[in-house]
Length: 307
Image (cartoon, rainbow, N blue to C red; front, side):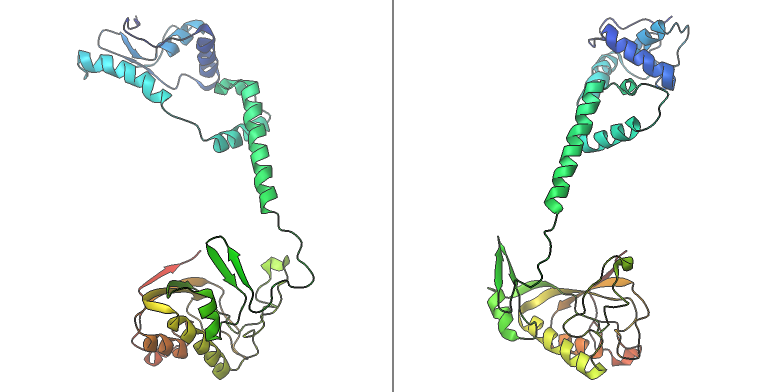
């Protein structure tokens, strides 16, 4: 015979007991009652009362005998209070309730403990939040004619965006107030956009202004050298440069179609402008050249794949 603990400070209203009973009826008695060696309830008073409502003669129990009397009294409080200290992620909760409400359930959704009005309010608030986010992400139609012109410097809060030619050293002077400590750049691969960048057919990109498949190997290396030289000159010693690059294959030159679209981030520390330019010249940054003897003594500090 189970006995309630007379020191239990947790109260269960008749309404809550019936909610617990509904949960047990639908899902089963999945959370056993904790009792001591004298069959006195330590945790599960509400479940025990719900079992009476359901007319159950026996309930699953776990006997706890390792606690001292002081520990037992403290645990009775902790078992109730610690659960109350938890919170909800309103977005995930709304998504779960919305999903359940869209199904043809064999039970009332109020069995979760939330009333219908609460469920509706949570779902509505989530829908409004999603709609607001989508509205903020809407991009206005692109104008027929470009607004920016070469030399335009856009001030974006603490950031700057310069429309310029990366081959021109003066462009870096306009953009930067001091030497750069990190550079992330994605130079072209001398590959035509048409047939390579298509967004699975849903997006049509225009060709790059240059290095879009029209350069010879010598022209392309010279093109990269001029840009890398400027980036190195505009960077502090020891600056970190990150470049997305093909995975183990060289950029396409006429007659050498690109064989892979897998990518990686090549991270290197610029310790020497000379080594930097040597790496650019022999294609170390681009995965170019199968002959390892052509590569300089210049090694990436870290390499991580991108999915």
